[in-house]
Every structure is written in C-alpha cells, then in structure tokens.
Image 1 (cartoon, rainbow, N blue to C red):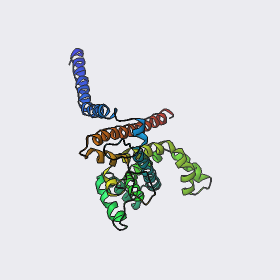
Image 2: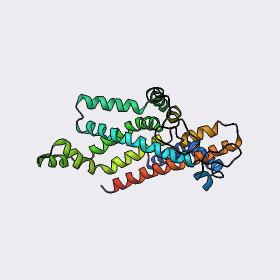
Image 3: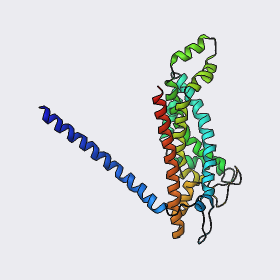
Image 4: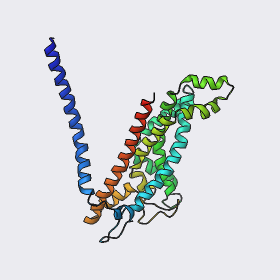
Length: 278
C-alpha cells in the first residue's frame, strides 16, 4: 500500500472514531441540556435553602440536600471503614483463600442492582424494627460503596513500592504495623480518589433509599427517623400530577447532577495530580 493510501485510510479511521464519539456523546449532551433548560429557572436561593411545601406554595429542597449529606456521611463511614480493611487484607495477603473469596464477593457485589441492596436492607433493618431511618439508608448506601472502595484500596496498595514494606520489616516492625504506619499513608491520594468515586456512585441512588430512609418533608430530626434525600425528592416530585412539583423535580435533578459532576471532577483532579507527582 502506498504512502498516500495509508494516509487516506488513517484519516478515514480517525473520522470514523470521531463520529462514534459524537454519536455516544449526543444522548448524554441531550439529557444534560434538557435538565439545564428545564431546571435552571427553578433553582433559586429560596429553592436551595427551603423545605418541601404544599402544592401552591413556594417550596425548596434544602432539607433534601442536608439529608443527602447526612446519608452520604453515614454511608461513607461504613463503606470506607469496611472497604479499606477488606481491600488492605486482599492486597497484603492475595494468595490466602479468604482474600480470594473476599475479592470474588466484592466483584459480585459490584454488579448487584442497587434496588436489590435496598430490598435486603429493608428486610434486615426496616421491617424488624417497623421504622424507616437514616441508619438503614446509610447502611444500604454503604454496602453499595464497599466493592468500589475494596477495589480502589487494592489497586492503591499495589502501587506502593515493596521496598517500603521490606524496610519496615527490616527494622523489626510487625507486618500489620508496617501496613498501618507506612503503606496506607503512602497510598492516601489513591485512597481518597477511590472514596470520592464511591461517593459519586452512591450519591445519586434512589432505589435503596425508597426502601430504607423513605423520605420526609421536614428537616432531619434524628438518626432513627426517616429523612429526605435528593434522589428521592426528584422521584417524588416527578411522579406528582402537579405542574409546580414537576418543575421542582427538574430543579432538584439539576442540583443532583451538578453535585455528582463536581465529585467526578474532583476524582479526575486528584487522579491527575497523583499521576503528575510520579
């Protein structure tokens, strides 16, 4: 094949790839533009700081934003604690049967639909106690976050130089102390990236919260009480027959998208900083 023909084929391949990228981006861009177009007029300071009001009155989603923050805090406390512990064990003892089983379970859990986790949490934490609560919702989201944190922790610890571990052991430090004092602090940027990725993943889930935290029209009142959240607020407003509430659904969806986008941008920034420091 001559040089001219190779260049022509190369240009055609590049154009085909660019067309595929544009084709893939078109649905995403359409959804984002529609959310911005319909949601932007609703988003005001009163909307962001107020609470849900009856039909005909000016309401807001401030209580849902606060509720989502509380649920995410509970979920990440659970997800990070268990996920980092499991991921550390899997990374440090990869050949042990328990580590192999833990990795397999984490991979399987990563593919389980969120609504299944919600039904499980409902059966274990809601139905026996006959009440929806912040804790049950946080546990459901925390279970969703665990597989992401496990895999992120495992990959982060694999990037730590083995010479660092060998140096700690040579000084007479026990294996667990070396891991806690040397390995984990060295991997904290990657661990933080994994934590943000898990937060972005669970922050927009509505299905588990419908079965656990349920929702509330007022401000949060306790860990053992129902609580509002942005995903459930979008769902509640969207299925309403009232036009004013459907408009608020678009506004709440826009806020949720912006928050999740901000977290994802934070993940990319941390990943870029981490790769640039190498």
